[in-house]
Amino acid sequence: MIIRKQRKTKETEITCILSMQSSENPGPIHSSLPFFDHLLTAMSFHGDFSLQLQGKGDIEIDPHHLVEDTGLVLGDAFAELASESGPLKRFAHSVIPMDDALAEVTVDVSGRPYLVYTAEYPQPLSGTFSMSLLQEFFYAFVHRGGVTLHAEVRYGSNSHHMAEALFKALGKALKTAYTPAKGKNQVLSTKGII
Image (cartoon, rainbow, N blue to C red; front, side, top):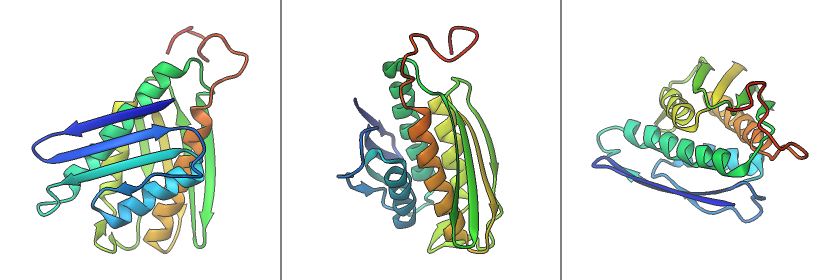
C-alpha cells in the first residue's frame, strides 16, 4: 500500500509518499533542512520502510513551521495507513544505542494521541538545527496520527547522536506497530474498536 499526502499553506508546502515495504530503494527526502533530512532518512532506513518527502517553507523566518507541518503530514499518512490496513500489531518498543547515546521509543497505535518526550540535549544545535524543534515534530505527528508515543533519550553527550538514536528507534517501532496482525480478524482492543 502506498500512501500519498500533501499539505500546502501560506507558510509551507510538503508532500510525502509512504510505503511500509522495504526501504531498499528509498526515495529522496528533501525538507530544506539537512539535519532533519538526516533524521528522517535514518528513521525510514532503520525502520525498513520507504519514505519520500519534499518540503519547503518560510525557513528564513524560522524552521518551526516546516518541522511541525512535516509532523502533521507524516501523522496523516500513518493515520491513513492504520485505517486502511486492517488489524495491526499495534504495540512496539525499540531501544537503540549510538556511541554515547541510548534512546528508547514505545508506540501504541491506539487512536488516542499522547506524547511523553524526554530528552536533555547538551548542545542546543546540531549544525544550524535547533534541537527544540524535535518536540514540535513529535507533538504534531502523534496528534495527527492518533498515536501514543513515549520517546526518551536515556542519556548521551552528543546531541546529534542522541537525536539520531531516537529517530532510528522510532523507525523500528513504527515498522513493528504498523505490521498487520496475522490471524486476527479484529482490532487488538478489548473494546473491539480503536
